[in-house]
Image 1: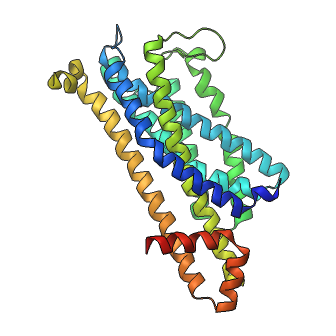
Image 2: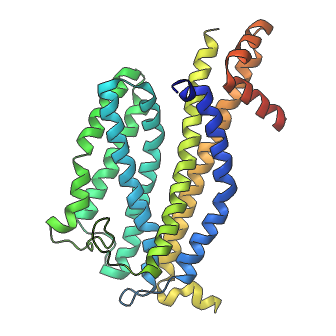
Image 3: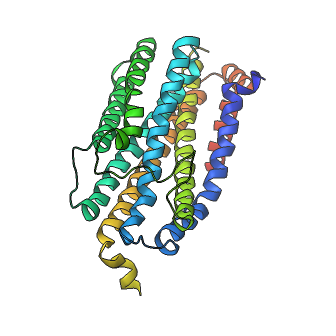
Length: 235
Length: 77
């Protein structure tokens, strides 16, 4: 069982997964774009500007999910000292940063026609900005510090402190009076979004998840080669 | 009809900018990630080629990664 998870076997599996995602990605992207730009109806209040939701919401979700995952692996790495988690976190962090930045930028582009402003120091917007700063700090540690053990310690501390911000982002729209609307989609309870908009949103979420998986696999593959490169020098 | 689609009832600028920025950012990250991966594969291959015949044989026997990179790069070349 553990032999299966050796870097060599993982490398071959990653290779196959990258090929598979590459083969279906453009088809899925075209379906997602057709639904979000053509087939989905305009909102009765926001009009066509609601289409920004199809890039904004999945970006924000993935940005949050990546940091939650990084925190979980950091805690596990802190306890069990599994080196693989370090490489996984290193590969995930840039994806999380990319999607958090996209959520902020597309949110700003949605805010202008909807609220009449590009930016407000609103609780949701500010907490997302704080998340972006935590991502920057997290990635900076990998870039600036060369000692791997020290990187693990510092990055884990940053992730754990940064995770305090995650429930603040989630509940900011309920705890404070904000410009940002409350969540329309709920895992428990009924969602306040019509199926004609939910379907394109899920299609675009799938596109973004595929893209995130592709980048993660490529980055993780790079990490495996980096380790193997070190080993080849020992021969 | 095309003009209507592009203008999106006056929201075109915001919508196309959102989708455009997302597309360009994702494409840039994809390109840079792929470039780094290729760079490491090439560097690994150069180091593999620099080994003596015995060392190279040993590396190829023990490492599926080395086998794979060698095979992939042979396909490319």
